[in-house]
Length: 385
Image (cartoon, rainbow, N blue to C red; front, side, top):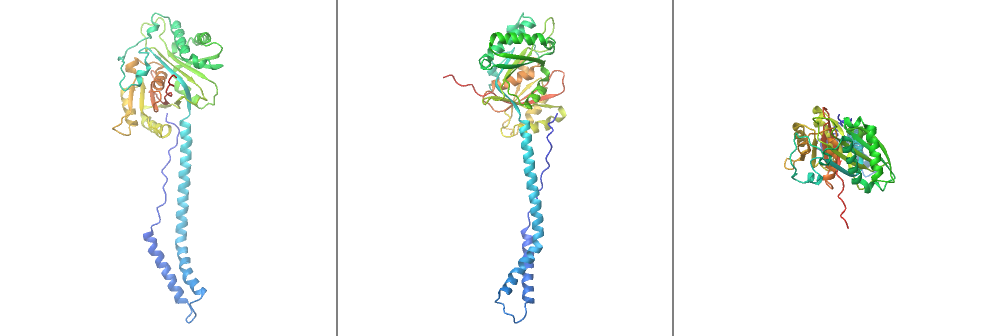
């Protein structure tokens, strides 16, 4: 859905007063006024008086003011109205820019994908990874493990990855974004997360909630409009279920540590849910309001059609000589699933540390809606002293 930003009609300024038309007219009027003063001046009355010269100079000025004054006043009124309208439009545009650029402050992010452990490779000009297009792959460390053990092992990996940052907090909220099968066991997964994090990150209070991973874009939208002071760890994961002969997606997960007051952090900006018939207008809004200063440098795609990726890249490319770089993740990560959008967000933020703004586009399985989300990658890691 296109953001409800109104379109601002161009402000028409009044045409400048044409001096080539008015100057001869004013000269003629002034000359006529001077002639009238001379004609009406009493014969024989001295002309070296203040009255004579006042009339001779004042009459043309008054005549020109009476003729030209209303025209000048009308022009100034229209000009002032146009300037005030432009200032109001700019004020409203600024408010909409602030609204569209509301964001989550992410101090760290990590992607866990079955295809590779080297997430940094996704930031290279040429990604040196094998093709997994149309393949369904699983975590190497998860082979022969039950679904419950897979979840436990992933939670351990996340806890180990973020433990240093988590230990500095007294309370953490954990939001679990789960695939449909895992969501049916939400209470069990919540308790599992509490136990794992309680063991590996002692001394911290963990509050755990679970919801569907496909609600990612609405969840982000809701969060950017909230005023929060709590630290939150978002864990999105898609696992293979037990006793299933053929799985419908590749395994993967993503985690984000969100700290509202952090100064050195990446950002996940307000997402937009688009449709095929509004895609061009939606991208124009993103360019104009969400990323007006620094152009988007790369686009990451998950679960998108080839035609959509081409259309998005073309719409964002202002200079044909400097085309926007596209990253088609499905060919590298395998068949996408409900968490593929979260994974794409994490890869864009982690692999492109210190880079310019990125656009992430993804589609949920069996959905017609396309989600567009601008991210600012994480800052570069400080070099060890």
